[in-house]
Image 1 (cartoon, rainbow, N blue to C red):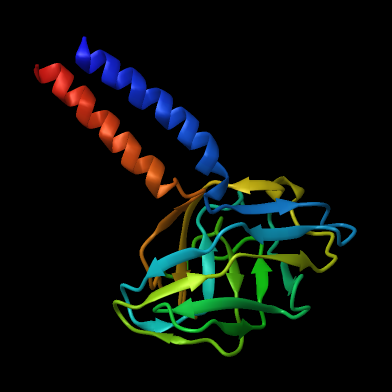
Image 2 (image 1 turned 30 degrees about the horizontal axis):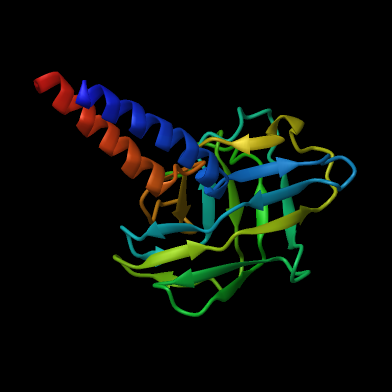
Length: 205
């Protein structure tokens, strides 16, 4: 009975806590219309990666973003706050720096290129790209970018991306660990771990 009561208490706590922290999960969202230039792409919270292969940071991949529709569309992304084609990053927790020439490629759309596949979408940078070393952490800062008016983008991309993301070099090689978005809250995961522990104790008692 005690274990049952504990389980119920934990469940209620997690439901309440989850409703408080759920909005803090990192997500990548698309809104508006590509055809009239009203579309925005947002990274809602900072996303941090750990470097597993050294190389020059070139892009952020959204694995299996959309089914390839026969055309590869690319659009510049203008940061709404800085009014520039840039993204703000931080390496190893140091001062923020800008990477410029920030754009978005709707679909790789070509034959597999190392870790890039035909259905992948990705953010790409063209200048001031940092060289990363194994063990570095790199944080992509949250922001919203205005998408240049382009009619060829697939409107099916509007919504919230749910899947794996990672960083790549210019030859399409994955440089970092894989981070799933939307990211589950660390606190919520800790609570779910506690729930599992209680359930396990109940089964063995």
